[in-house]
Length: 321
Image (cartoon, rainbow, N blue to C red):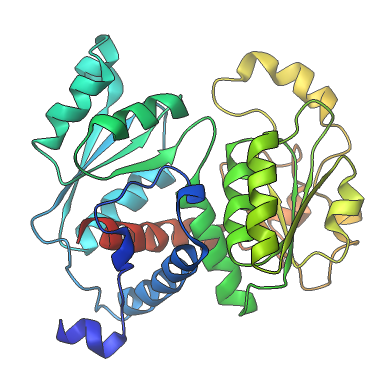
């Protein structure tokens, strides 16, 4: 514990043994503490002092969807913390052949210290968490992407300092990434503007819950169909692909519906001069974002991608250590 005291690392004790399915289940204080811990972990990791707090722990990582950042960041993060990340493709497991989710949850709980799952259905992950007796971490579902949002907050905090009072604009599909972002930003008192085409709005219940959280923290959340209104005076602008995995058949229609929602030089001119451009990646250049923006001086996408690992280490330490 000496190293922990020297670098003042404080796992979020209230989260020990809990799941991370959505940040709606966490208090604002817990979310803020995770962001702080992630930043501290990044510093000590760069100094070669990452504490091996998960020595002997094994994280099972189930993937129903392809992954670059989620798999590598969790696997390397576990290694840096002294633990082991076990990759499991759902197609190679009995769950991929119809084994009941409750059975899988109970069985894996006998082998593992935690489960991370990147899945198609949020309901399935909720069911897995219900029957597993070890923490379950949502690595992405159709409804939410909490680990990404924690990395997003970490990236903004590192470059802007205090998060409270900053404005972030999300332009695009009201999808899982948008949901996670508005929830996380609400927890830290940011002002969130979400611009989506008609028919692609965020889930109304999640939007209302985020608005209530934001209000309690001195922030705000509002939705619009006007990208210019959303990015006006923004400190950060966020984009995601217009067509996510599993929606490939909708590509042609989505390209038509999202016309006018590209993050380009004309649109970002309405933001603050020192705005940050963020994207969860992978990106489609010249589709949802112009190359001049994503590869420009205001882009922080690769720092953001790296921070997935540090944010997730904060989660892993708090849930599993």
